[in-house]
Image (tube, rainbow, N blue to C red; front, top):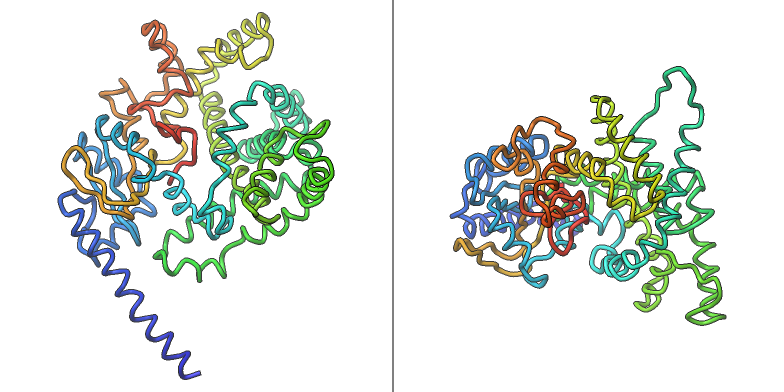
Length: 449
């Protein structure tokens, strides 16, 4: 008992000193980069706590003071280095994965080692699956996604009458997105199981809440905090109850029939199972990976949809031209993936909504694996975090005239005047001036804050 008490006393003394030493070392390395907030090793925690509730204001302050350069903001256990110029943004985008890494930065930010499990944190193999399979089969699965969205809306908003009916927009959007995503990830009938869909949405919210809670604590203390606050691991256990029968059924079919068989599912779950087996991972990892992909799709897509819906509700005069375009294109093309590319007004409306709201505040997020010297001569030490101020850039009046005004046709007008270069103003196209989905190899991936 005495030895245990002495160990705790030693840990209580050594751990803060170790954290302060690492913070002091990082501060010295970044001394040439200006700071928003105090920069001294202990006083910097004032800025770190302020960032929790006033991140947008601090990023805007840094952008206005050091536009065209870079600045840093303290976190509890790290420095966040923000680059603002198009040249530095492009440079950051082009840096190799062994120098700066997005997946590790995102994993550290949403604390995947605690919210999903250590394998998902250190080996996010689902990214390769998404790139190799999901994108390749997008044309094939588009009709299924379309069908599921329509069925989900009919199920969730079925009592439409002549009177006004209250509908919780974000909650409905989360459920619709979860069902549409799950149609691709785990297929029918699981994608319509109320218990599984509710669990998927709850887990996405649990991860967000856990991330916010852990943001108040230095990295080395977060494991102990999650012992009392983390609901996501309980969700993993519950998700196994839903997914295990389907997974075991497919494992049995693979064992009996080999790599291919008639009616073999072509969905994300099957691809995850095959990759997990190749890596000798167990059932837990398969379930954790499915939940991770669910989280990414629910978090970003439902927020984007809800923002766009609110803009339309606030300015209903835009409804008529959008409806006219939809009616015209669908009458000629049908409701197909190809038809979507011809809906320029809708595309512009969604892009403008993303410009104003984003899906986070820091994008192009990267963690340095080694010291990185940028073209401006600044060396960013290993284990630092780099990013760009999404909202500050997308509300810059030099880039977007009247940036605080929601202009639904802003980008469709740009496309009309840009001829062959019009593609760069499409909803899905990124650039140093438009970072709503990131930029470069990991565009459309997880936002950081």
